Image (cartoon, rainbow over all chains, first blue to last red; front, side, top):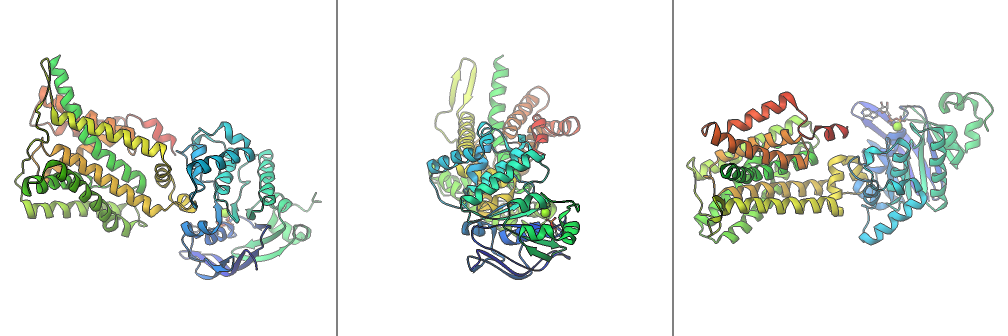
Amino acid sequence: MKLLELDAVAAAYGAVQALQSLSLGVAKGEIVALLGANGAGKSTTLRAISGLLRPTRGEIRFEGAPIAGMHPERVVRLGIAHVPEGRRVFPGLTVRENILLGASNRRASRAQLGREADEMYEIFPDLLRLQGALGWTLSGGQQQMLALARGLMAQPKLLLLDEPSLGLAPLIVQQVFRVIARIREQGTTVLLVEQNARIALSVADRGYVLETGRLVTEGSPGELWDNEEVRAAYLGGKVTKAA
Amino acid sequence: MTVLLQLLFQGVGIGAVYALVALGFVLIYRATNVVNFAQGQFAVVGAYGMVVTTADLGLPYWLGILITLAVMALFGALFNLGVYYPLRNRSFLPVVISTIGASIFITNIILGVYGPEPSMLAPMLDAPGISLGNLFLDAQYLTIIAVTLALVALQYLFFEHTLLGKRMQAVSQDKEMASLLGIKVGWMIMLTFIYSAMLGGIAGILVAPILFVSVGLGGQIALKAFAATIIGGFGDVPGAIVGGIAIGVIETFGAYYISVPYKDAFAFIVLFAFLLLRPSGLFGEKVSQKA
Ligand SMILES: Nc1ncnc2c1ncn2[C@@H]1O[C@H](COP(=O)(O)OP(=O)(O)O)[C@@H](O)[C@H]1O
Ligand SMILES: [Mg+2]
């Protein structure tokens, strides 16, 4: 049984059909990349999973149980944490407060939460000296680290990451992806949305490619990268030799 | 000098009442982006709670206060469910109109029961006040100032030092993200309405003994609380407190030195001056940083 399964899911914003009959699966322990150009429906897929958007058709199952249309406050309690596009750090709260609020989906004592927040500073050392800084003062890279730390505080079984590389300098992107690889090593399954296919495929076990709300192809990173048609059309890669 | 201090004392006292109403106003605005035009009516309901319990039913003051506070909590919850919740996913205007409708509804219920004649309440405390030389510190004004200070301190501790307070702040900053984290957004907003209604109710309880209690009180207080939030920078919590006290002081001095009949106009004048010259309020810079 897959940890997460989408079965013929469709979703719309009013009259705009954003997803049409999308089916995909994520097994426990995997990093799965969801790729595609801007507007392909990647964020919409994550929003449907986490409950921000109610699918118009289709089934979403998490650990075998249906979750489509469930309220986000309940979905996160099942163990799905969504780190949305744009990080969405609380601007008027401090770094530490942002981190602590990540655990709002579960019961834990204040002392326990404090210890867990301290552990986050081991994964994200930059956040330690910033712990008293307000969210809006952080740089993009720092906000991304904070958004990841906040997501991890939910102790999710499945982490949904939406464009963690967006707007970051290449060096910071590498840092972020090292953390993502480390998150998986610690047993968390990751569904990773990216426009930056090269970096996403460098950590992923499998990938799906979306175009205008439909699945175009799926496969291992090598298969996707070697398919020149796919690469030229959807992955934004020039036809040069990939590393 | 004595006159100045005396006026200042009274101005701060009445200003504290405006500050409490303004605070409720700001908290609801921050949590829901709704400008609640019924905030002044919360104070009126609180004041009439005291009229009903202490004047009509003859209950002791402390019991009247407890009952009124409980009624205000219930009132805040019903206000949320009836006025805000059904329209929460609509745009700004329908909700604002809904609060105006609620305000008219409350006013007319009270008018129907008590008519337009004002009611009077006995003083809350037996002691009339304290004399400091030529300065006379009225007991009710002292009570107002003390209660307001205590509430502001408690509220600060709550929002800055409890996880629940942080969750409520998170909801006011980004509801969608808050719900993704598992914060129960609907409950946080419910708590905000309950607390804001109680703040308004406390303002009403506190002014009831020094003003005539009538339905007209709501409009007056709402206007000044609104002016207070403009002065303080719309949506700014410390600003609302400073703004409320500023309005109280300005109108008290204005009434003494310029004109008593135009007492209520001073809040208007200050409001217009700020809207024209400094629309972001005294603490404007901080607000613009939020964007
Ligand atoms: N809030 C919205 N209202 C209307 N249309 C939207 C909204 N969000 C996304 N869309 C549309 O849905 C489609 C998929 O968008 P999205 O899932 O954000 O794409 P991606 O994340 O792959 O860039 C696009 O055509 C986009 O214009
Ligand atoms: Mg997107």
